[in-house]
Image (cartoon, protein in one colour):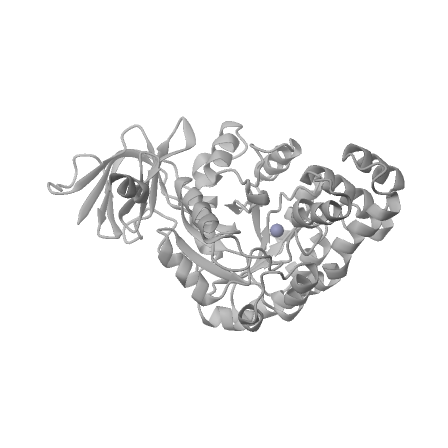
Length: 452
Ligand SMILES: [Zn+2]
């Protein structure tokens, strides 16, 4: 069957200037050609009208959590319910993502394949199942790890289809976001009955251990302030807070740092990319690994624990040594932390960004195309370059993730997005392998079930 995506402005993922008003001709699941309107006759073709719209390659997102069946996060947390995983996949698809790398890291090949079959989005797995990473996960959480997960090593995962190692280290095992929104609030609630929001728990964590996670950073006054801000004065003493935060963060921390080195060695041996948790707490270790002969991807180089200047200088050093510098959208625009935008834009402006992903942000990530929209409007990055960062650059950085995808060119798999130039996040149509899976901004699968 022939499909023509007609008359759209094409940003083809290669980083070159848009082509105005062209027809993308798709034969089966493959792009056959891109032609000027009126060139090429396809009388029986199905037409997807795209006049006045932008046509982009389907997005490839290499940093997602909660997008496959099995233990959540590289801390081996209890799995999300089936329906929540499906809802997460739906959301990524509606945002224009056609290929996802789930970096929860303890997913089995069987579970990854089952997820991939259950949903139109292409889902691939990464593994973090090295001895030290498993140990760090077990100490920090491990509540979702059954024997089959423990036994499913990274080596075996790669042999059975995992395309990368990752996420190596995480906000859960390295005292980052996972500690702030999950484990510290949980322990405080257990002791006091008070539910503390993530930002307050994060302030407490920084007061006890600093941004770089060090016992030397302990600041009694700052802890008192953070306790007061969280409504915990009289409920927890400064020493209690120190014990809670240290007890959550420190036991697995050095082991998780060791896991980064271990994974870099294994990634070199298996010749797969290694996605590392890049944050203030892990930056020295990541910089050390950057010198080694391994394909390193520095995940979320705009991590909230960095200052903008620190993030830029660190990313410069990494890039000099051939590391792929990734930024994650997180909840930069919809969230409550205004400095996230400064971090993201500083890296764009410095020309340091190679790839864009979402990460998870406690489940509240913004769409990649929202970030592209805001960043291009702010003038910190050009549209063709930004689109390449979310498509072809990701396919190139992770060779097994999306072969023949990430560019709209003859011979490519026909994954594409039709969206509004006035608001890029307003995705209208998504095609995967030549099939329309989102129409008028709604899932085709839902339309079918509503019709019944
Ligand atoms: Zn991370």
